[in-house]
Length: 100
Image 1 (tube, one colour):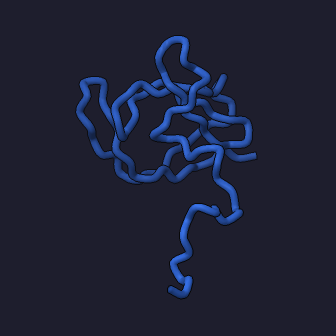
Image 2 (cartoon, one colour; image 1 turned 45 degrees about the vertical axis):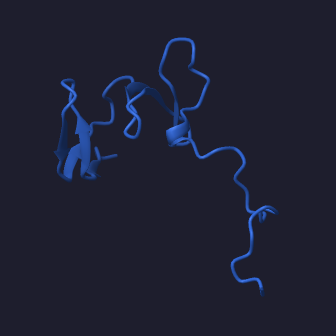
């Protein structure tokens, strides 16, 4: 199997100095056997600046937790959509198209 070329999207990147730089869209070559893959990393939250631990999940998604010591099981609120989301209509939300 051939080694893949991956198209990376344009994105902002925060430098160690705290400044933010913009990375242009580009193609990157990844070899198949690069060694162990990094499954988690710490970075500042893009919304509030708090330390966040991002963990790569087995099915391809990411989970974002509080990055302070002893708080690794608490999901970060800026990057967490919540457990209360479902497809059933909320009884407390008014219907916009209801006759008045």
